[in-house]
Length: 474
Image 1 (spheres, rainbow, N blue to C red):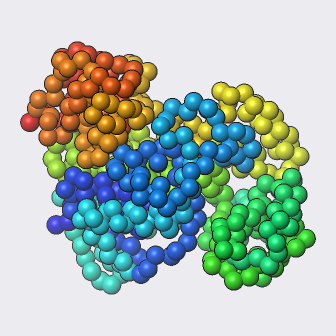
Image 2: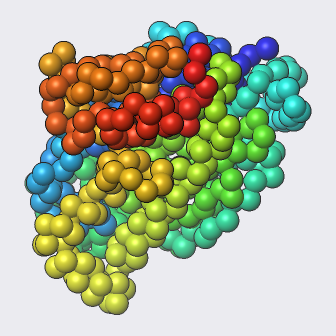
Image 3: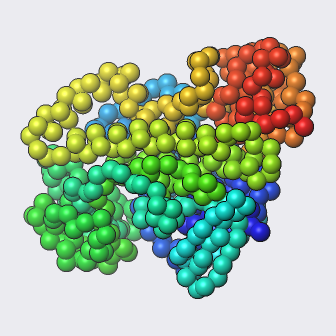
């Protein structure tokens, strides 16, 4: 029997497969597409995702193929400076196309031993007390202990489970494509700047070699299941807004997206779970979608591995929904707000001007960027130290960096007292005695995802907290 089947082929799937393999879990990825699409709907990693890659030793691969930017404009396209003093060692956005992210995560997962089967479409599933039965379109039947659906906003897994997906349908749609243009860059940039004075959902970004990523509002709403636009439609919409179609030609790909906003009722149904766009869809404002899915996987991976490996405490796997569902709800709310601010209606433009004034206050600007970049996330671990429930930034230690010590996907006790012990949990928690850095506490217990589970210096207090996240002592 397979330990975990993961359905889908995007970044969420690949991140989860790697996380599970770190713990020796047998993973099978089922992707219905025969080959990667090569499309890059997402263009970068926000701060928390950059930290995630660093915590797993992947960041150098991404830095080699990406470009760092510390620029504003991520909240509703309102152009404000990148805030100072963000609580991170990685205060930048890493521009890297989604196709590159998928390739690097595929390499990582397969290096760790994940099996990926393409051209395998899931059409049915059932579950019982011992596992999940999956039926594929070619008639193959597979059996696993758990199954995770990361198969997009139209998730087959979610529909087969009958999980509700409440929210709002699209009110507006936007055309998106990578195309070549027949005008000089300066002329194109001047037209775009003029149009964006009144229509923020219009833009053209150079990708190199004469190729531009172009976005333009569509005409009306064709529905959530829309056909791929053709080049003639793209040209018509460009002329409607800019008075010219820039001579666009030779499209690499064309697509459309809406502002539908939906959130799954539950992330877990017995032995089947949902992650990424299968659990939540929202407009791409702020570039949060890919990042939200990767961070879902980072939260779920070690918990599901603990269940498979038999040491998970009661409620650990359910904490995935309890922690990530509110995070997604917050992202949906901030994208709803951003879409209102992108409207060309007079009232919305007035509110946009007011929000822009408020963002001149450093604290407001920082608060909104912390939302977009997900470094402001705090899980509810109850009352206690101000760090409790937050992820801990990377800190320098005498023996290296904190994130370098977390690459095995285990818990970590960072002990500045030298008096504490994790005896009984040494197979799940690393104990690092180090007086370097400044973690704002005598000792901190970190979960495998880097969130602070305990702060203190009392051994008995620590022993009371370890079983909550790491099960009974061996």
